[in-house]
Image (cartoon, rainbow, N blue to C red; front, side, top):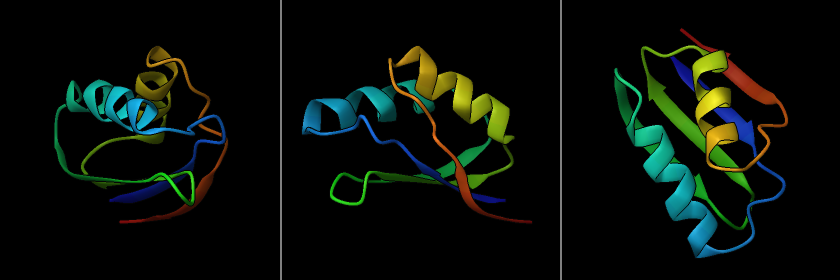
Length: 71
């Protein structure tokens, strides 16, 4: 599954590292791509949006929306 999420509060490399670290605690994630300029996070793996949203929230950020989701 591929999930793309907008994280509007992400504005520096420190934010990127916090989000990557928090997402790293999730199981079954194959790849995480964080685009600071676009304020987007793309996740590939067998994970649900609610798990990803919770991990991003634990890092101190808001997962605004799912842009696309494919299985």
